[in-house]
Image: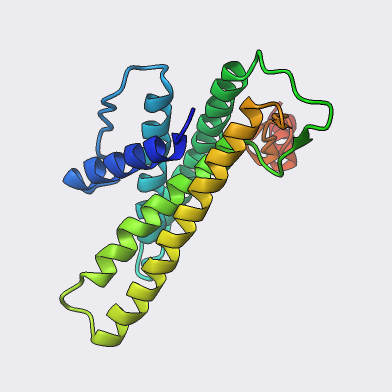
Length: 206
């Protein structure tokens, strides 16, 4: 589990590069890792983030057709649910990995689970890729490049800090200094039995 963040960041960067070989939101993911492994989960998680990044760009086109915009909005909603499901699968991996660790009497809980911190690492990787693109734009003016280079440096520093925090958290969980307690994300608006707009519509149609 040592230097887990370095492996995660490398997988995220690979997924981003693989996506941009085609650079289309309908590109087929070709996960190079063995299904069910943590590497496979990390790759799929980042692929979802990259696709959603581009969907968010498309939907902000001021001239987009309203029907197309609605279609993309619903696709983003599905993507968010898939993202959440992947994060929970990653947390399941850690719960199993640390299942035999007995927390120390003074062990404390973290503000977020390992997988949700790794989720932020994945999104940072996407931001860094695209901010670096802006730095290298040949059609941009000098001030744009300067501003983007400054932002890129901040993002890189943020990834370094978060990577250290993730590795420290995993080490402390392994040593029993912290313990995992996972709360499943209960997205009520995606559940037909919990979203009043959906279940009232079912009742009216029933």
